[in-house]
Every structure is written in C-alpha cells, then in structure tokens.
Image 1 (tube, rainbow, N blue to C red):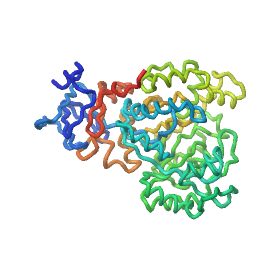
Image 2 (cartoon, rainbow, N blue to C red; image 1 turned 90 degrees about the horizontal axis):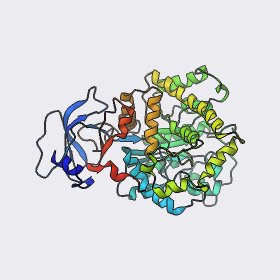
Image 3 (cartoon, helix red, strand yellow; image 1 turned 180 degrees about the horizontal axis):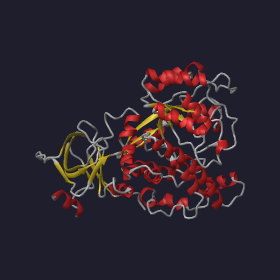
Image 4 (tube, rainbow, N blue to C red; image 1 turned 45 degrees about the vertical axis):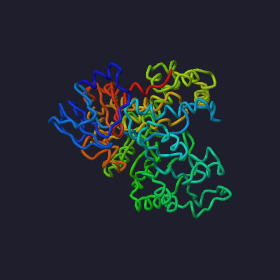
Length: 484
C-alpha cells in the first residue's frame, strides 16, 4: 500500500525499474484461463514473469512491490498490422520535417499509452524501424518482409527506379513488361532469394500483394499463381507464415485458393455483389474455405473508418487526440495544407458533398462488418489489427486507432472475452510468438497492463489503463501522453 500511496502523492518516479517486481492483490485476466484469478500475486524477474499465484508471495529484500488492489492485470496488447513510418497526413514531399521528428518521438509512446506492447509491421522500412527502436520506451516490434512484384501494387505509385530503392524484397515477374533498374540483379529477386533474405533479416512473416487495382481499376499487374506458390514454398522452409494484402472478393479468392496463412484485410470490396443485403453464396464459399483452413483473418476496420472520418466536420474533436498527438502537430492538422489528402478524396468522388461520401463509405464498411460477423458466428478466432496508418489520413493515429479497432470489433458483436483473446493470445499464436506473449504465465515476457476497470465487462475499460509494465518496467500511463 505504501508504494501506491507514494505514487499517488507524486513521491515515486513515473517509471519504476527493478530486477524484481511483485504485483500484489490483482485480479488476473489471462485469456487461457476460464475464470479470473482474484487477489493474485505475480512476480517479475529480469523482465519475465516467474511466478503467478492465488496465494500471497513473500516479498524479497529490495523487491519493488506494486499494490494492485481493485485493479485488473491483463497481458499487453498486440496490434498485428501497423506501419511505423511517416506521420499520418504529412505532405507527399515529407514536409514539415520538424513535425515528422516530433511524431517519431511520440509514436511508440502513443502505442504504449493505449497498452499496445507488441507490434507487427507487415511492410517494414528498415530505417523507420531503427528510428522506432531508438526511442527510450517503445513496444516490442516485429516485421514481415514485403515482396511486391516489379510493376505491381504498390510499385505502380513509385516507378521501377524508386521501387528498387524502397522495396528490397521485390520480385521480378517475367510476364510483366517493366524496365529492370540499373544495378538490379534478377537472380536476387526470385521468390526463393527474397524469402531467404527476409529470414536472414529476422522477418517474422512474408507479405505478398494480391491487388489489381483500387475502385474501378483492375489493370495493375498481379502476382502469378506460379510465383505465389513459390513464395509459399520458400516461406515454409523458414517456418514463416505468408500474409496476403487483399481486400476485394476476387483478390481474396486468390489468397484463399493458394492456402496462404494470413489475410491482411477484411473484405470490404464486394464488386458485383455490392448491393447485396446478405452474404452472397460466392463470398460465403470463400469464407467457408477460410474457416476450413484456419487462416488468420484481420478485420482492419480502421482503414475504412479513417477514410470515412476524415470527411466529417470536427474529425479531430475526440479528446483522445490530445493524448497521442503533440500540440504542434494537432495545430498543423487544422491548417489548410494539411487537408491535401481530404481534397484528393473529394476529387475522387467528383464533387459529391462530404456527408454523401461518408454514407457511401459506410456501405463499404457494412460489407466488411458482415464478413467478420459471418466468420465469428462460425467460431473463427479474431485478431486485433488496425493497419495504422493505412493512408495519409490524420485521423488514424498510433495507439488511438488500435483502441478504436477494439471498439469497432465489439460493435459488430464480438464478445469482450473474445476481444481480449484477439488482442493477446490469438495474435501471439498467429505469428509464432506465443512462447513469449499473449498470456500471464511463468516464463513469458512481462509486458502487462493494470486497468482500473474490467475489460470483460466494458470495452471502455481499455481506456482505464493505469500502469504499463514493459519488460518488468512499470510506466505510469500519463507519463506517455503527448506534450501540448
């Protein structure tokens, strides 16, 4: 009790570090347990949980004691689809650079502010990962190797020369007529070569892009079935799961038929079935194959939510933005130059009012929701994946987007119990990390959260976070808030 009292009085530091930590009197909610463990004790030594007990544990001399009476201890959350790169909404030329620097400092803190202690970046930039890891407090981060084909998405936006600099794992597909950039050795850009390089670089997965165009477009070169099979075979040699970028019915059918491991998006583009009120048979057949194969399926509601919300007045009115976005950046977001991406979206809709565009986008969101509801109704396990940021929309902010993804999952009917599993053990299992994360058990990394409310009773409990425990280091949540 003394430590808790001193902390409340401001007489203890906002971050506590120790070789040994004893959490006392907590209600432990761990997804593998059928029932909460009340009045529990958890010992952490050298950054890992060493003991979980329903009986009191005698404190060691010099051990930090943390009284968690009336609080709930859960595993740290994992968001398995984020991009640690540019500040959302930054101008295409990377300006203002001073704001980008502020963002890079705050970004990992914002994830921690919402209890996200593990991340997976499926399209990593080595430079940005290094910047992220240089910050003094940051979630544990893992990455996929992203392997587009030269000339396909997303290299269609960069051109061959720039693509060769951005995508180190790019594949050259023989039937795609693209000039091979000078200095690029085709032998180093086969499925086998790039997957071997990913494994050497410490990737946790392989990401392929199955995309022939956005909206009404369908003319972008797409990865061939033969190359897709070779990517999968190479990945199996290194025990790397294969993640597919695909969000339309025809693209997801390719990924499912290829028996890939992870779908990186919900299916919000139903193409010719857009007007359907129920789930058409063609879509149901794809989803039934997802169920049969056990494919990990990421909803990523945040993608369409971000594109919709940026159109609305007072898009940044939520008070949470002041917790995760530095004041200088918030001020810039309200400026005219910062509206460039919103204006691009408006032009794409050929002058329709913003409110009308939001209604159209809501229909798209509804399609993605129905897909997730179908999978969930059949008992398919969910995972937490926000795709932050999926586009240059400033409403999609680190940490806050993860929290909003949790809320959207609950909104479509996923139970609070299954949401806790989606944010913890399910993600850990999907990416081969369950030996270290996902539950509160002896031997696991001590990435833990102390909440003031029960997340099995209310989704808003995830916003009642009091303390983040990162590798045994106790961090006061409010110390992570952005400077205003």
